[in-house]
Image 1 (cartoon, rainbow, N blue to C red):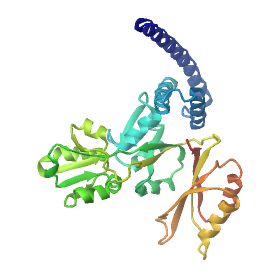
Image 2 (image 1 turned 90 degrees about the vertical axis):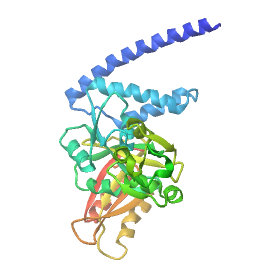
Image 3 (image 1 turned 45 degrees about the vertical axis):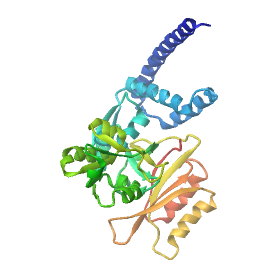
Image 4 (image 1 turned 180 degrees about the vertical axis):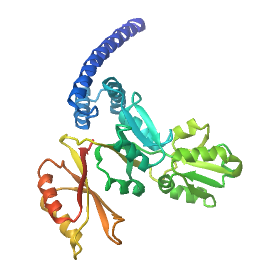
Length: 354
């Protein structure tokens, strides 16, 4: 076949793709009406997890996995829009890593709503001002986002999905690198880049901001005072800043795990993670006794952290991620035992691992 014939073949397939997408859209519209009648949620993470596995299986490695999933994400995002406009809250403004995580999970066809704090995101979801919120929970380099963790113990909202967002920070400014005297960014980003900052700008003041995008704005407003910022390339683009150095995070594989919060519970997907929080009895070995339940039931623990309860001095609330879904064995029996033993016990959500 010559080039013209090949192009004609591609044009024919493109026409078929559009026709199939139109047919899919008609079915999605009917699904949306059925869900609304039944009061069912638009976002069903366990079904999305199954679809991903099916797509990868059908692909048989022909298309690059990342490209295939990116195409699929936008198709599903369009479905969300067709089923009924979905609103997603995130820690704004535009250009933050939370913004990019929301885009990664929900695509471009939903309405993304920026909020200035985690408290505002939780409150917006609780008031049904938005359908879901996207919250950073932990970073592979700098650990848990403690500012966010405290809200989970005092809300009826649940974790219903997660997003792993690769975080590639850059240094941005509208001044020469040699003139930088102050570097702004979110505390998590400053922590993720601490070694790089020590090696390259040991004399620069590090100023924490509410978000990395807010830091970019400060770099613009205070450029004549030697200001720069750390954040995403998107933040640099949105604020007209020059990128002076790329991938300045201390670890190349730097990744932040975001969770999606909402009012719904997610059904088992076959490969799930469950997040719980609890306090332990005040006795020697209290925490060890609680953790022993997981060993007895053969349940893998992914991570364990603690935060002050804020109700009683020197009392701690433990957060733990484990393998399995709260409604399936062996985790169901294990959680029942913990509920009977722990003074405070709460399942924050079970959700697909992928």
